[in-house]
Length: 323
Image (cartoon, rainbow, N blue to C red; front, side, top):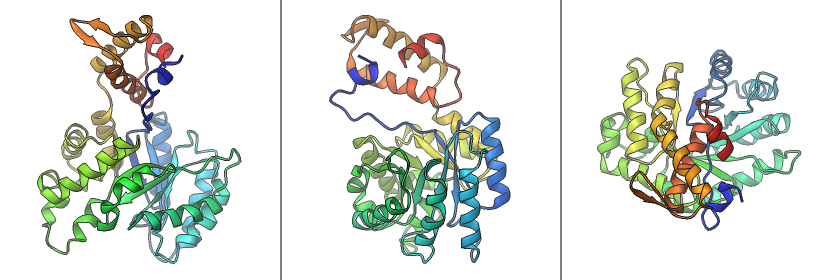
């Protein structure tokens, strides 16, 4: 049996996505981002933005441009997603009608902002599936933005929906929804990691994602000049809050995010050694460097290899054989 089958017989197999989700809204930035994705061999996702990152009043032409970019031969890795307008916006249905029929087969995912309830999300999924019919019968994965009180209150139910593969935290909208009760300092570091209400929201989103095998995507860092701030935010999101993916809004933020969320070389080497020995023992318990390992730890190290595989690492033959 393949390791992925042996190790997850009684567990949900987690979704693995590229660790960086880069947002671009203007035509210039979208084309530059696609070129950058090709330079880095497709190790990060790009979300083409119809909503906050795009100019207002030009919705039809903008949606047509995004559909053309996703359907084009420049979409080498088929890791382009789209953020449409929220379900209450007049352009929501229009976005779906223009974009999905034109490129459903090549669209990596669709991002829904400002979801308030599970029922609202289910209604939106019906509209998405009405327009976004793939030729292989698969549904388009959906990423839901958790940035309202209602969505946070129902985050477990939202994470449980099969079509949802990722939840993203909308920090600034979430803080703004408290109408001054949370200070503006909580929209950036260190406040975003220390304010109790903000930290609670981050942890509840991450916990819901891990319960249902989904990806928890951390909010953007608005600092675009000091890259050390981005790197530190990414490290804290990964090590303290359990996030496995993070937004980027500037090309200089891509590499620090990838580095912070990717496994280290030592972790990869340990994973190869432990899993190879475990495979030779038919996945029974083993001793490695004086420590006991069994399927509980094997699942951890298997995930390390899967994350490395989706990143920029060139894995050795032993890892490729395991995978």
